[in-house]
Length: 114
Ligand code: HEC
Image (cartoon, rainbow, N blue to C red; front, side, top):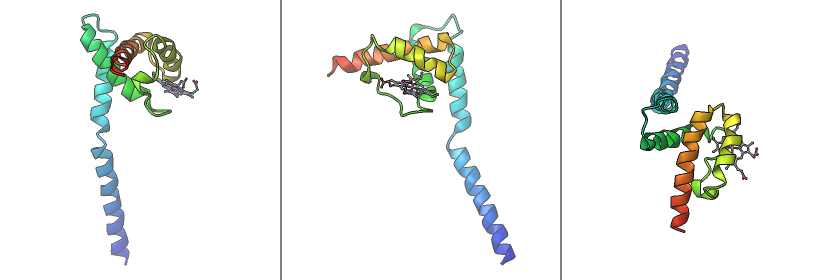
């Protein structure tokens, strides 16, 4: 009986580690950190900034609520909304600007196809 309990505990621990590993936190964190650092990279192209903005948006804008659809706001409305939300998210102004660049473009594209 004792041995069974020990084995069950071990299985639980392995299952926990497997879940933690499979969720890929390390990779996601690295991608988010890389995206965040684009904000201060003066050599970054507009495409790199938009791509980094998209990564930051999905990493940082769904910790409190579901990720809003880019088309849920007009291109004109996003800058103010992101500025308000970036205070809650602890994003730098430069990082928030990249998210704005992504959302304004994505909203415009999505709404063009409505
Ligand atoms: C710390 C929690 C938190 C984070 C992080 C956060 N939000 Fe929010 N968000 C809220 C809360 C609370 C509300 C609803 C009340 C409000 O507007 O303050 C909200 C509302 C919204 C709305 C809905 C506004 C409306 O009129 O329906 C949008 C869009 C939004 N957030 C976008 C974002 C974006 C983009 C980011 C990332 C830059 C973000 N949020 C990050 C807490 C957060």
